[in-house]
Image (cartoon, rainbow, N blue to C red; front, side, top):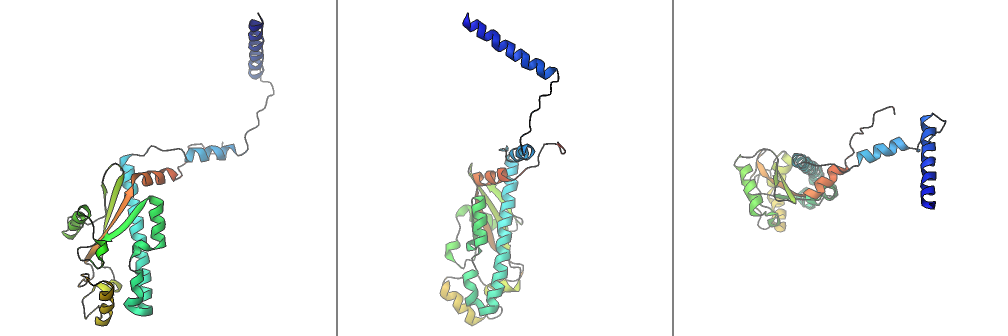
Length: 235
C-alpha cells in the first residue's frame, strides 16, 4: 500500500510540473555562460569520418609542405654560407632533412623525410628498391609531378622530383673546373670520397624526395583541423 501511495504522489508531482510549464508560468531557465562558444568548439572538434581520397589529398599537401620548406631553407642557407666561406662553410647545411623546421613538420605529420639520387654524394642516401623504382620513373620522364603511393594499411609514401634550379646548386653539382672550383671539390671529396654528384646543368633532375607518412598521423592532423560550425549565426 505504501508503495502505491508513493507512486501516486510522484505521478501527481510530475503532472503538476507539466501543468506549470504548459500554462506559461514564469519559469525561467538561466542559459549556460559561454554556451554558444562551447557548442561551437565541441562541433569543430568532433571526430570526423575520413575517407581514402581525403587521406591521399592530405598526404600530398603535407608532402608538398615539407619539400617546399626544405628547398626554401636550404637555398637560403647555402647561398649565405657560400658567400661567407665557400663550400667548406656550406657543407654542414646541405642536408635539409636535419633542419629544425623540417623536424617540426615531420613530428606534426608523423613523417620521415629523405632524399635520394642515382648519382649519390652521400652513400647513406641510397634508397630501397621500391623507392629507386619510382626515382627511375622520374628519370625516364614517366613521372613529372609529386606522387602519393599507399604502401600498406598503415603507411603512405610521398615522392617529388628535385631539379637544379639555381647557380647556387651548381657550385657543388656543376662541371668540375667550371662551376665547381678544383680546390673546393677537394673539400667535397674529403667529406664524400665516393661522390658522383657532379656534371649537372640548370634544369637537370638531381634526385627525388621520398617522405614516409603514417596514416594515423595524417588522420590525426585532419581531425585536429577546426571545421566550420553548423550552428546558425545570431542564436
